[in-house]
Length: 192
Image (tube, rainbow, N blue to C red; front, side):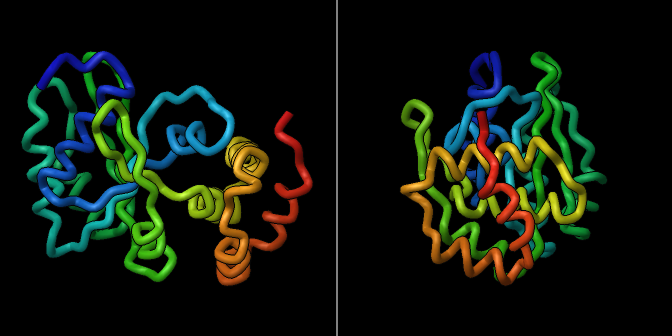
């Protein structure tokens, strides 16, 4: 492993490992928000990971490759896989935390992986969540626990991507996920 200096290096490093062990992932969080909307500062890196319980060894193998530069709790990983929750890995040299969200096996989550977008950092291909699925995911979180940051992120994505969004897909899932009220709210806001 070359020297890791920051967020970008960590994204590339983990994408290579996830690809090597055939773990399906999507880059999400503030990286995706900055890609589709207005840039904002970040303290962590977020990945959505599609992994079934029977394949949990794949993610453990990824973590076995990390070495002393990372703090990993294997019991947290096993629990996250069993409960479709999240686990964290901390890079000790930079203090940057990676959050790995294990998704439930439902129609919406499966669609996220089918609709991912490929982007590149240098020559490294990276799978990133689609703009529509990012908005829907953030609104789902706000449905449970309201976050002005998530609402603002969604507003920025809608403003920047307004001519590029798959509005039919968005409308179908807004109804299925019962997000009409929240979507109407962000549609009426301005980012700046």
